[in-house]
Image (cartoon, rainbow, N blue to C red):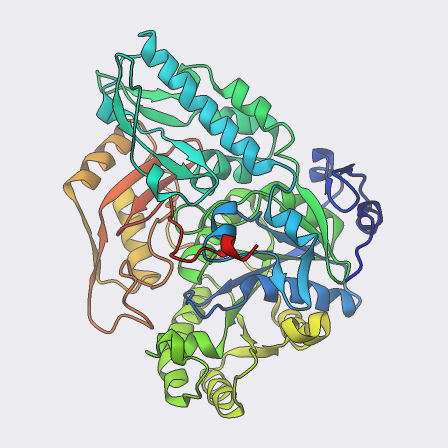
Length: 524
């Protein structure tokens, strides 16, 4: 695939860029406010992910290419990849086959340094916090300090560390991966450098000996952190293999943060294109729900259509087939696993949208399996289209693009909860409507933190649930849909005051992943 100079791609959307080499550019923030919005968003989500892969990013790329092949002025907005998954399990995050964004290796690695800037800003705050503790300008018990350090690499040995050895303030701490940093979430949700700085100042670092909250602004670290992010707040312009303009910006994880690219990138795209494809991480229970309840609500974004990506292999997995047998024909497993797809369709319908299912065809899918799936989709009145963008590029996504445009509407979303609902009510509404639970239970620790949230006046914030991506429930072993009544368990709560949301934690959520036995890194 031959790439065009980034200045040529910039001309397609009528912007000037700050070049990072020949094929990557930073888009100045002035374009966020230049002109009126003229475009609508198309959100791409999926069923619950499986080891078989669903192809959500590949589908997003192919859909944008298909729209341009149809003569539509379309753009794509994606998250930035993390080095952790790239060298760990996932490998690259720039699509596959004939539906890719370029230059893939540079995007997957250091790109324009945005992740390094987030890492540095986060760790500057950690250093200044420890400095304030060292000189006694802050008096915080060790078990009341919430701020850790971050690194953009899967490294399980850093999950628990001891800091301050050799000083008078030794304590247990740890590292999280950079996409889990609250700085990353703030970068994605802020609409200006000024808002970003203010949000950083509102990050809760912990509580002092008198149980009073300590914020970043109390140690005056927000200015230095914002300075480090001066360029990172600008979206990055690249291209697909077919020359479609792509804005790639920020990379919050979807199982512990809001899981999509920046509002700034979407605002720029909405002013330069008629249709903007945006991807939200994982299934509708995480990425799509958070996109609508947090991101769309915060930015008042014109979301007009939703795509749910599914594959025969993934449905067979949800139907009980082990990974090593997924290439074998199994029509009954497709039918059994369909319940997971149906649940995600119902989730999107509850928001007020009629989704289009993209049946992402893989080599080896049989006609009998595809026939069984499409018959079930038709029986349930679900709009669908076959997606063959991996093998055929944008041409293989035209049927999907046509179906999406047919179903696009101006819609006011039906949010899961009202922001003025009590926190417990918001969580319960999420658990019942989206996760199919009968109710919610809170541990003693979670109840203690809930009291603190209310005491410091943050109970009107949206909910950003941290739970497994592999199941609709909090239990990753429950595939398909829960068949027995269950209670959703909230084990703890994280207060992300700067990002502007409350993070209930359900189950064992890893904020610093480890490498698998055979990491992707050995392949290079």
